[in-house]
Image (cartoon, rainbow, N blue to C red; front, top):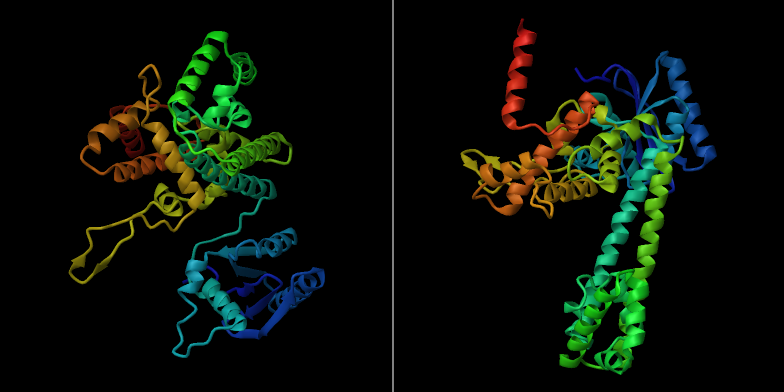
Length: 430
């Protein structure tokens, strides 16, 4: 029997400016016709009045279900939870698969609200109710960070493409064309001719101020720059120079905005508004090799309430790295791709950790020896992306374990893990 089969259940179909509400009585009948509430104080208070009326009539608490609708459902969810009401959010994939069960093709907000109420009452579905303002704020800030980083990458590529036209040999001078030294030179000298016409003293002085390195490095960089300028045949144009400067200006502005975001994320985590457990969980994640600060915050905020996940497989599905199964009769597809139905930003952060986990330091020491050996030995012969997904699976097991045990990650060989497992199993059997 479904968990909320004998309860009063309210379904809410959320829109931008208003919502439609349907109420089901404990016996499953429609308590009253679907009604409309506006997203303002009067509308929310009217909804509270109707909820209390139903609770008094049936002498029981109500349960509210709503569909995750971008950001439009969040103010209503926060309001309901602030009134100590039990409100849950349903994944749109679940509601969409249940909306067209009738033979007649009818689609309207009233029917959708009733459908959501029936899903909450008659089906055992996974819905979440966790909503913490600092965690949500951190999640928004992290997503903005990745958006700005993507935009910055676009303009870095545009700057690189423009340099191929204006100054083709420039890239051999600096390892990073968007580094401080490179940007300082490009802001002053956009063309090979401008570099050749400038005095050595001016360029050396510019490199000393921007790079904060010694005179020897600056002289070597100057020699490379002059050599590249003398051998390059670029297209000199005032318009192309302005295009270069425009890209540089945008990149610098984006760098500034990203730094402000990172500073705000750190301030919010260190503030008293953030739960102590959240701060501890970030430290637990950062104990895993390859997980940095922003990655830890991103993964934690994308997960939300870790208590919603009872086993690692649920977390795997939430990140969307579980295989999509395609079978029918005797047919079984051998092309199983990731479902990619979970959190996209969380999956991106996890992928970055997987890449970092199989790398080595400059001295040749592995970031994570266990995962690197697993990648080289057990996954030998597999495609690179398939192998990286396997590493992501391993990492989710690590993440789940540190949250479950509330202990920092400890690097152990598989043989040690197996021995510990057998010992714990024998103790529990005794």
